[in-house]
Length: 73
Image: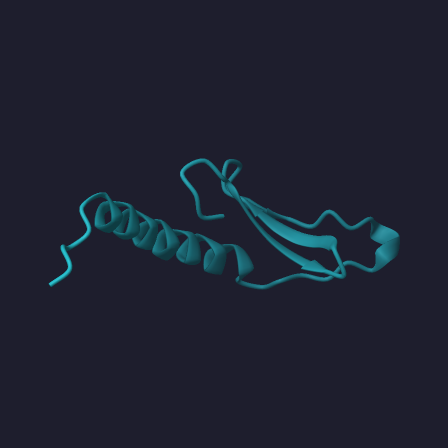
């Protein structure tokens, strides 16, 4: 969920998608079918939004820092 274009944060197990935050739709999505006994991730969407904000701020800092790196002394 942290790039200039990506809009998803995902939780998985053994390569399977169990839950993801769809930032474009503004909601958490549980892709498991009802027979799989899906469970909830309370607060996961809010945490994903917070993590995305932190990551995008860090990404902007890194992009700026590497455009004009300090000269070696």
